[in-house]
Length: 389
Ligand SMILES: Cc1cc2nc3c(=O)[nH]c(=O)nc-3n(C[C@H](O)[C@H](O)[C@H](O)COP(=O)(O)OP(=O)(O)OC[C@H]3O[C@@H](n4cnc5c(N)ncnc54)[C@H](O)[C@@H]3O)c2cc1C
Image 1 (cartoon, rainbow, N blue to C red):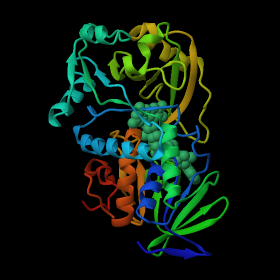
Image 2 (image 1 turned 135 degrees about the vertical axis):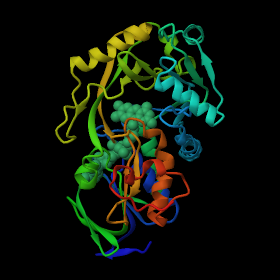
Image 3 (image 1 turned 135 degrees about the horizontal axis):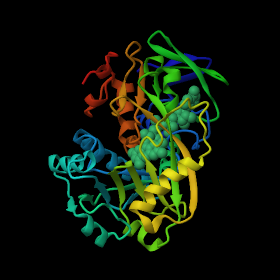
Image 4 (image 1 turned 120 degrees about the vertical axis):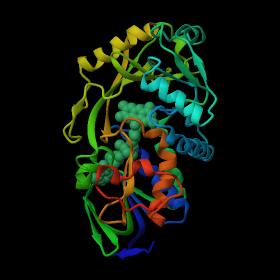
C-alpha cells in the first residue's frame, strides 16, 4: 500500500461509512499502523442505518451455512479482545435456541452446523424447552436446538468501542460528513465529501443500505428493506431476563422471527426477518413505525411468548440490505481493485463485524485474506471478482 497525498491529507485507506463494519475496518487498519480516515455522514453511532436498536444476536450454530462457523469462532475471539480493551461488556452469553419444524431450515441447518463443527448443543422437545425456559411456548411438534455459546452483542456500544480503539491507534474519524462520490486516481482513490476532498491508496466502502448509490455495480445486488423492531413489557418479567431466556431464531407459519431477553429497553425484544417485505430507498424510508408494524410483532409474541405480550415499550425502524442469496458481499471492486466492497447484512451480519474488520484490512493491505470468503465473492452473481484466495 503506498500513501497518496494531496494538500497535506495523506491516507493509506479511507473507510466510507463508520457503522458496524466501517468502525471495525478502521480499527483493524489503524492497529496495523495504517493511516486511516473514517468518514460517516450521520453521528457515531446513530439510528438511521442497520446497527441500532440496542443489540444483535450472535450464535455459533449457523443454520444459514456451516461455512460461517470458522468466521464466527474468530469473531467471538475478536469481540472478547475488543471488550477487554474497552472495559465494558459488549458480548452477553445467554445461550441460543434455533427452532422450526424438524425438517425446517432453522432447526435442520443449526443441527448440521453443530455436527459438522462439533459444537456443543442439545436438542430439546418443545415441552423440555418450556420446562427449562418457561417463557417459550412453541408448537408441540417443534424440536429446538440449544447452543450454549449463543447470546447478543450491544451493537451501538460495539461501534463506539471499535471507534475508540481505532482512534487510540491513530485513526481519524469524521462524523457528519457525507461522501458525495469517489473516483480512481492512478492506483489510488479520491473521495469528495460535502466538506472536503481526500486521497488514499485504498477505499473501503462500508456504506450499508446506501452502498448501491455509491457503487452502481451493487445497486441491484444490495437491496435496502425496511424492518421494525418491537419491545413489549413482559407480564412475567422474571421469565425474560438474560439468565433465564436464551436468544432465539424461530420459523413458524407466520414467518421467521428472532428475539431477545429484556435488555436496555424494559421489554422483550422481537423482530421478523423481512418484516413486511418493503423494498425502500433509505433516503425516503418511513422511519416512524405504524400500527401494522406493531400488530405483526404483537400477534407473534402473543402466540409463542404469551407472558411477554404486555404493553408496548418501544418500536424502531431499521434497514436490512439484502443480496439475492442472503450471503454477504466482501470483495474487491470488479474494475478498481484498490476499492474494497463490504455489504455484509441480509439481516445477519452484525455478529461478524469484528472478523469482517480483519478481513477488510487484509483485502485493503494485500488484496487477499487467510479467511475463507469464497461464499462472499461478487463473481457468484456474474459480476466478476478480483479477490485471490
Ligand atoms: C432490525 C435488524 C435486526 C438485525 N438483527 C441482527 C442480529 O440479530 N444479528 C446479526 O448478526 N445481525 C443482525 N442484523 C444485521 C446487522 O445489523 C447488519 O448486518 C449490520 O448492522 C450492517 O452493518 P453496516 O456497517 O453494513 O451498516 P451500518 O451500520 O448501517 O453502517 C453503514 C454506514 O455507512 C454510512 N454511510 C452511508 N452512506 C454514506 C455516505 N455517503 N457518506 C458517509 N457515510 C455514509 C451510514 O450512515 C452508516 O453509518 C440486523 C439488522 C437489522 C436492521
